[in-house]
Image 1 (cartoon, rainbow, N blue to C red):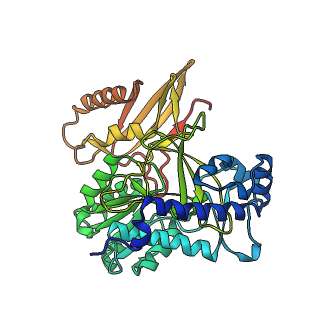
Image 2: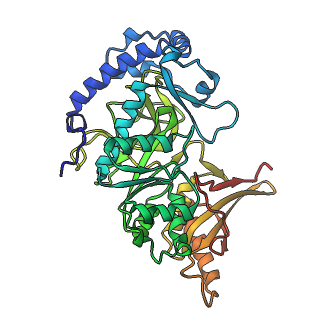
Image 3: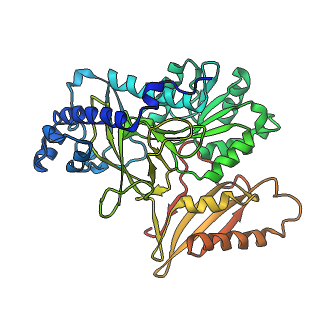
Length: 434
């Protein structure tokens, strides 16, 4: 079976791929120069479109941040006549001025193709039934995957998020084989199907899960794959770069392929902003290479990862990024120690007695930071004699201390006590400044 939707692009030699990147970068900088924001930004940096003569010249261009997008709201970054814009999307979860992205017909077609390439790479075909369990609207996840799945020829069920009873009924009635879902909701669904006359999540007959929209660990992936008997694929995206399918996991599962014909990726030191080499952990920086309405140059994502440009065993030559390790702005500093929520999740999900849901709470005791973790118990273990719970609590606290080098107070709770999230999971509650 052909594993490439566009074999010519996906397997290009590195030198040929970089040639396309340079041509598109030059056009992108020219296009960006038409916007009010970038004309002023590049002028201040004494950079002109004709200065971009090689890929290395991208380093001459200043970084763009989310604050820049907010300050340019609403039309400061628009690079074409407003009549050419046919859709906008906005970044989710922001406060105050939103970050809005404009799309031309070309932009939506290019994005849709990337989503279709990603789904095909994962193994989905036109015979599959795709149930989209993400929110529709200004959030990019719903519509982005919807149109990509349709282009691939799948029957799409636009279920949107929430309403577990309806989701299960749709799966059963239409024999859904692929779902687009947040990992936190997938875990909740696996725990909850028994309430809807499904004995085992595997009985739903799902073959694929596309997961994204929130950070999650490899342990969570394994738990979901085992519970449903499916193959789960990590999808990375952000609205500033269109949305889902900026990078996507292939069956080799050795990182996520960045579609380099549409994005130029860099890894930088988040403090010094020095560009780092392959294998070095840092902040992902992305530049659009194939967007007309609102090109963005050297966007600081705040997402921490590593990158490799070695050819993948799947045959694709596009660079791979490691699963997102955390966000520079999600990092918690507890007693002077840097801690990421993903580190805590990794520990918890490796323990069989732990359920699907947890919550991290940060508090102050006097002048000292204190880490508290509420952990649901796996309902399979929550029966009969529960005198062993104290031992489990101490075990979790010990393993967290070993992984984090910070003492955590663990509070074990019954299954279902922590409210499930139907969208992005809100794992951290910081009460230190309340």
